[in-house]
Image 1: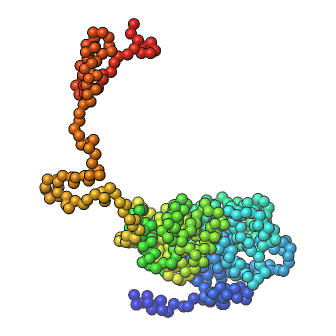
Image 2 (image 1 turned 135 degrees about the vertical axis):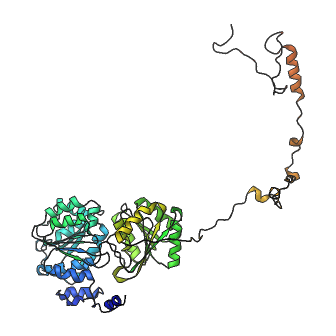
Image 3 (image 1 turned 180 degrees about the vertical axis):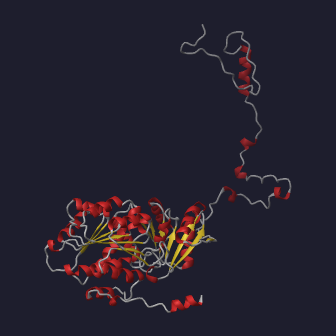
Length: 493
């Protein structure tokens, strides 16, 4: 243990960006962004990319993979920088493919930030919005194109994007692109590119499928790994609580209060569940927005912008937000539902504790989640301790409605509980008494006389017919039914 502490104390400091052979304008943009030293993935990957080698880069989410490929690519494209207004002088030189709209938008923001003092142009294209503004930007000419695969194919088929001069290709979060079925689109897009190019593949995980993809499209790649595959950030405190489905929402509210969390991301497994949960938290008095695939791109960007500005307390999201969301100083993440895919757990909790900051990841576990928790344990190679939680009763109480029993005089005690004979009901008030219902039954005199008269005359059945005797259980003043001929063919002959 002492040797481990000594080794940690003697660890060399992180290398600085200004030690890299980067253009002064790029270094200026990095400094203005508040970065001085490199993260491990940046320190290892940037020199390899600058040397022109293909790279397979693996690092846990939130460690700076975007800058690890953006800065060296911009540096290599500085030789194409020019002041011409002709689109022909600004062909697409670098293509960055991302699985989701949010990640593509984030990468585009990083490219613009680092290239702000240069003449290199960039644009982002993704689905869910009108193609016309994107088409106008593409036709002006851009050096860096950031895109989602589906929308890029739309532009290629419309001849808005020409990729025959691409020199650099980046597949960002490639494992996620394969998970959501983008492999055929990737293969089509890569077929449009020159074979002589530099290809970079960055991902948080390296599955066998990713390695097969790399073997097909990368040439003698250098593998750069700075953490165990699927490892979780050490700065994130991970807690697992045993709950029931009915108590989940109350547990989230309670932990927000107890931990003093001003904001949190709440992950669920379905789009319908995200919409319903967001409405429920709104009724609880929390400022909440939903983020899922059924939202339009404009709605998703507005919800994310409101959350980043601190105007929204809870952002309820599906796994569309598990990759690529870069929210500074996000204090906590809730797994309202345990993810179906264990790798998504790593990406979900990677939204907090970014860039060395501390974070909290809370997972709510029900009895039905045992198998998925076991898969997460095998993935992160760590035993998960599921803790009980004592739920405070914070539900608002409604006043009890007054009933009829409230208006009655209270009984001192229940006699049956003492083994006594039950006391008689208290007498009704005079206003409630009705003498008609208090009298004993008396048969009507006219009814009795009618019956006696019918018996003497033989009734209506014919002269001399004996009067039918009253059936048992029938009162004598009730007239018996008489047999009558049917109106339609049922009469007696």
